[in-house]
Length: 91
Picture 1 (tube, rainbow, N blue to C red):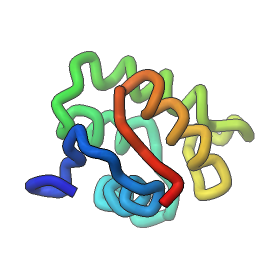
Picture 2: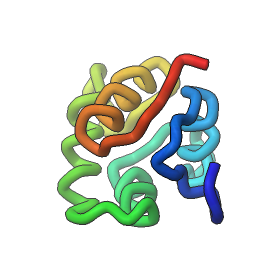
Picture 3: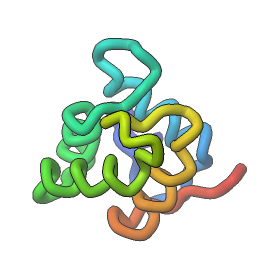
Picture 4: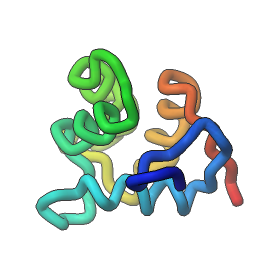
């Protein structure tokens, strides 16, 4: 991870990505909400973070709970790679 826990453009593992997201789980429920993801994208320097966060949750949230949980993290990884340009490897 880069300075202040913000991933740089270098590759990170899925575990690194999960660890990075955990710092934005402000209510510690083990899930990422749209608001929490918006903050993560904003801190990474992303423009239109609210819009991107909404799209990310809709893409990843297969059970339509409004949150991304552990079972849906792979969907969020795919979105982050494709749409946010993050480089995330399996290991």
